Length: 251
View (cartoon, rainbow, N blue to C red):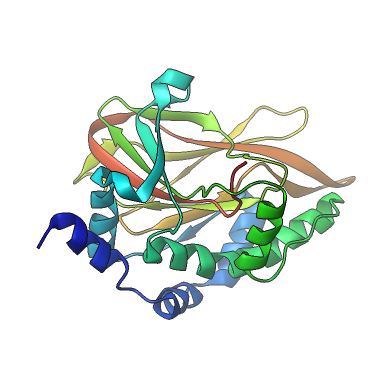
């Protein structure tokens, strides 16, 4: 059987119900605490190794993507990534759909604390409708590929007026086996303070949920906003693939 057909059949084999069951079984109470305290939360074992390998193999299948970005051409770092086109592979769609309602309450609570009027609906379809009505119609889930010497500069994934304040990255490769280096890095800038770094230890199939732009922090004089950026440190050897789940679409 053709490899592309096998990959498509495998990626589309998981049902949205199975993805939701796996995601709902995680300790979301602890994840919310970690998001509030650190701006990120580790989600262990979202994908099985075979699912990771099959998603990574999609990188060579041009038909499932809308665009390719070479980071070095834009000053983003070194490496490359591709944005999926609609319709998304069913596994990617299932993850996006199932993760959103777990994160929306955190997003709404953060906006309330920061005095931001925007509220997010309970389901992702309604939020995408808001994006599309504003002209943000291009899908943003992506696959990233890094090789030896590649890295991703600290950045924020902001694509238009409507931004969901939390996103998810899922590591598809295994550290120390497939690559060395390439740690996920998050930095947080608090007012009148130097930036605080956070390195998140991920294994194949693990995910990290993290703040896209800013989050609230309780200070002695009330709540204030801190600004966050994320990136990937330099790969020392091997090859690293990541699935990025961004919940707002792009204009």
